[in-house]
Amino acid sequence: MKKIVLMLLIYIMITGCQEQSYPTIKNDESFVASLNVRDSSLSFISDGAQSMATWNLNELYTGGILLNNNQDLLLFGYQLNHVSLFSLQRGELLEKWTIGEGITGAIEIGDEIALASSKTNEVIIVSKRGEITKRINVGLYPMDMKIYNGDLYVINYKDTSLSVIELTSKTVVREFEVPSSSTGLFIDENVIWVGGHGQGSKPRTDLRFYSSQNGAELGSVEVGTMPVNVVKDKEGYFVASHGSNEIYQLDRNKKVVNSRIIGANPFTLVTFSEWVVVAGYDSNELYFLNKDTLEPERTVGVEKGPFVLLSREKVME
Figure 1: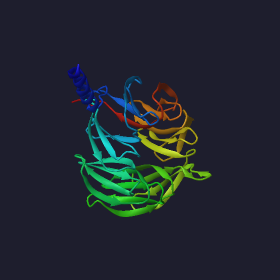
Figure 2: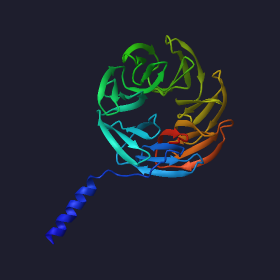
Figure 3: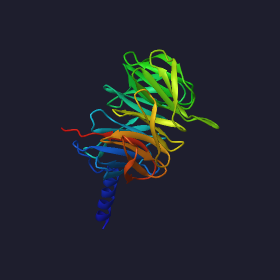
């Protein structure tokens, strides 16, 4: 009897130490993945707007990126002291890298990854083995990051600055003035687009444009309340304004050509296949919009609190 009990205890210890496995996502499958922050899950939706798989995660992740190999997924959480690297093809956790709490953004830069730390007000450069190779001081609460013309642009959410890091030297070479609580960073044709939430009783209702060369303000466009995400497609630019539940379409001249109320609290959107896909944070749905009309053609339910969307078109081995 004692032997049986001992064997059971050993089995429980072994199985308890094993990492959770997830449904696999093949390399030749297109998907849009929704990171749902209210129940910590990932919902994978096919290019036919059908549910493919759900990963029920055991930690509270608040953001992530799909790496350039289109096979690995890096997830981070503001309250976690590590970031996690997952394999889509194998459906498993590959590694955890201890970085420290407060990670609010990530972007791949060649053979390394830049992580924005809101706790230390740094951009932390990490190798793909998880080794910290550089810490770069920026403004208060760095969050959004974009690479453009060999530089890394960083929005400091609780500051009035945008930091520009030269990737060759990994040093801050310029800082531009932007409104506090800015987000929705986007860069195209030497123009920096900046949205945001606004402050107090004065929410932001516009996107502002700045020169990527000298930071000079170039103008603005009204796009609803709290514009927080911008994407580009051959049809133009698409903007999610989550405060007014609106999606805007702009032409190449940055003029509004269409808008529509979509869902409840749309924090993010991506272009995917023939659609613009919008995540409704409070409605727990993804809306697949016609790119020309912004009419919703499909609606797919996901888990609670879709907050980040990641997409991949078909990749063949």
